[in-house]
Length: 260
Image 1: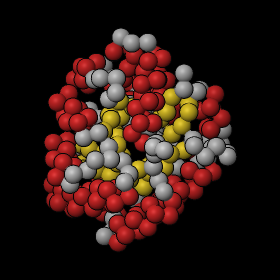
Image 2 (image 1 turned 135 degrees about the horizontal axis):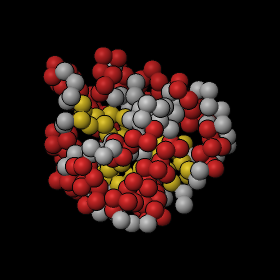
Image 3 (image 1 turned 180 degrees about the vertical axis):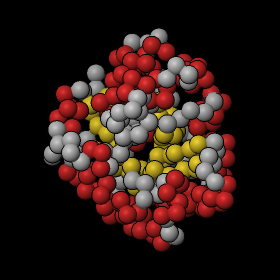
Image 4 (image 1 turned 90 degrees about the horizontal axis):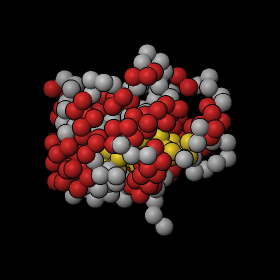
């Protein structure tokens, strides 16, 4: 029962000493990972990681390049031109990790919207899906995507919004990243949402090394936690684990992997 971690930062320093991680992932039936960049200074690092981590298997690491709203102070307008060139040169599978984070200071919101819009336009130019980070801005973000007439879909990473918001994203061609947050007992609203999603709606993720699930609280998160996260989803949805793996993998391939 193969699975894919649709969002992890394995290029981060927390994994620099884990030389056997690739072998451990294969042994755990991992069939791939998606690794997004968050800042321009890390574009080349993510590119190099994608080329060397899987030891010759070119289809294991799916790379995305983008400018994350959390690191707004690090971004400069010319980073958008750099991103455009890097997309042309390295052909990532998506533009990301980008988005809106309105839990951050209100003074940052206008600049966040600017960088998000410009990167959506780059995704349209290159006909690529998006890897999206969103906190406290789901309605605004969905509205922006509609206004920009974005039609290439993608993944709403770490989704914890309402079922109504979920369906708005699904209508726009996105799927929802489900990860460690749903393993906490207090996440009752998320549990209700996960139960109600259609099987075409979700992918599995960890956001490694961050967002550790309840069973690994206080530890460095890893894609190796995906099987236990999938178990939680299977229990919530009262479905066989094999269905969770199959649907999430099919959804990832449908949205992220280029057709033809």
